[in-house]
Every structure is written in C-alpha cells, then in structure tokens.
Image (cartoon, rainbow, N blue to C red; front, top):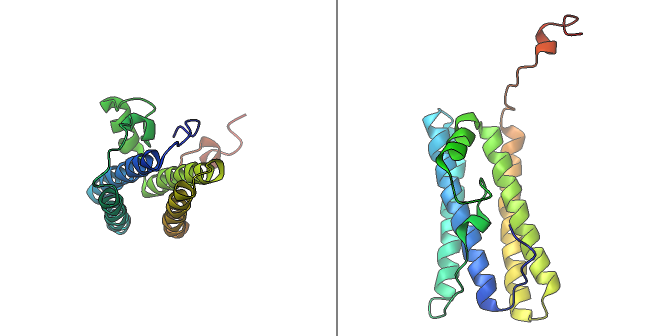
Length: 172
C-alpha cells in the first residue's frame, strides 16, 4: 500500500477504503476456495465469513458515497500478493505453496498495513471528516486482525523439512 500519497479529500479517503475492502473480499474468497479444495474446511469457513464481513463494509461505504464521484485508483497499488498487475505464474505459485497458517499470516499482514494506512491518514489530515472516517476504518481493521490472530493461534504450523532435524551430526 502506498502511504506516501496524502489523502486530500473525503472522496479520496472513501476511494482508498473501498479499494482496500474490495481487495480483502477478493483475497478472502480466493483463500476460502483454495483451503476448501485442500480439505481445510474450518479455515475456509473463517475466510468466507471474513469475505462476507468485508463485502458488507464495502457495500456500506459504497452506499455512503453513491451520489458522489470518487477518484480512480490503480487496483494493483492495493494488491496483497503482487507488486504489479497480477501474473498467473506468481499467483498460482503462492496458492500452490500456501497453507492455512500462511493464508492467515498473509491476511493479517494486509490488514495491519491497511490499519497503518488509515492511522497515517488520520494523523496527517486537518479535515475532521477524513480523520473520523480514517479512524473508523482503522478500528474495523483492528477487529479483523484480532479475529485472524485468534485463528492463527489455533492453526497448525506448516511443516518445514530441515535436514539437520532428521540427520543430526551428518550435516557439517
């Protein structure tokens, strides 16, 4: 997320908030489908619930600005998994290697970046309407982070093969 661009208007803040929420919905749905396909039904259901919550928040934001014109933003600026427009190879590789633990860590990292973004916006603006919106968004991100951290604490850690663990004394 690019936190260097100042938010100059309420419309800018809403546009960023909508972009963040829509990216979350897309990723959570994608994570849910991947986890379901790999037999991780509990984690898949968690991501489906998170996707529904984010979709409801995005819809509420969209309704608040329905009559207003929002600036156009580049979606790749808000992408969780790629620094540029999505490329199938890198995206597929991430999903091929991803465990439930990894999905939760990716999601928590993205939510923390979103929270930090809104905290910076709230701190740096002189417009009380922007500050209020940014602080509300930051609190919403905090709720999601807490839910995912609880799930992460109960998710099995991914297995990582380390030769030294299986062949002590032979690896010198």
